[in-house]
Length: 360
Image (cartoon, rainbow, N blue to C red; front, top):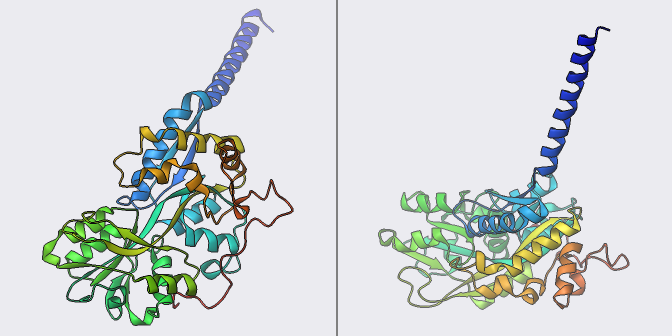
């Protein structure tokens, strides 16, 4: 081989090697991006979830080569599907969806998702029911019967709405149902296309604010009695509490309002790296001051590690368990990671497979 040709070949090989090394270096530098499934754009789930993703990225990008991206979704059912399909690494799930999916009952009968793990509890998922006063003169949830009602979008509220109403004896045949997300529900109320709406959201919901501020609608907040809350808990897989909404939370609200609420969970799959989950939990609880103010959520909900696992109905991810044990938090038996307690059941089933309480 002529010397010049050999030199060209050698230089070509060196160039290829350098390109490969540069590509490997870039690949090594590229951060791992965790996808966080939250909720519809106008909800607390997305607003707070976006702040959480920013917080994690700011605190984990340099030292841990991790970033997080919050994405909008239709809600808990959509989030669960994304987790199962590995389109998301983290998600916000309402308790009803989390427990029935884990156990494979009710809506998820026959398809338990045994890999579902909790990182912690989050802000409450508040079941806001609002109506037009002409169609809901009593201001009670049962005023909804026979009306044109938005039950929430198929992935954000429909399941819990119909479980709640079904437990109170109001079924699909008793309603003229529409399936709209929170902001679409507000617009439909304004347009006179519906008479009431279920708007599942965090505390101080933007869409509920818009409805109650619009005096042309003559709106009314539909409330739950203590007996009705007890009936929902007894007659459905929904497990929640009667939540008091303080006066002045919403425009023109001079007295406390009472509705139903359930826990939201921050969840992931069991196979997410334990060290990653540990860091997520650590940053979440230690950096609250960077992102948690002005969100309409009581500070203790997002800063008190003991509250974050109290009555938790899902098993913790082992990375989250490590963090809570370091904080001296007593983890309830049903929340123990099965990987760390192989001889114990992860959690007792929350509901038996029975007639669907939603009236389907």
